[in-house]
Amino acid sequence: MKKTSQATKVISALQKTDQGLTANEMKNRFGVTNARALVTHLRQNGFAIYLNKTPAYVDRNGNERKGVSRYRLGTPSRAIIAAGYKALAATRGLVA
Image (cartoon, rainbow, N blue to C red; front, side):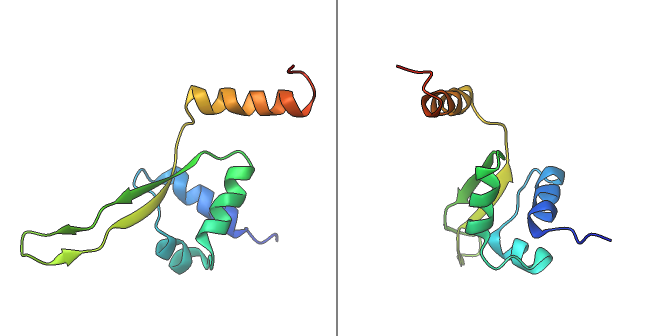
């Protein structure tokens, strides 16, 4: 039986949640040691993964809370898709 890769597990989890995953969640759930490298690999393979940063804040009890960064799977904008097509065309010599 083939072992499921970390990348496949992370993509599957991102598809199932709207809240996304933090680097710590990826580490604890899937054993990902370098979330940034994995996300870069997934982006290079065509997945539109965005990083949403929540700023630090003070809660209603006066306690300081750190901000949280979450990776989420999204839909690329038309500008991103157009830039991708332009880059492909340039590498194939189709753009002057």
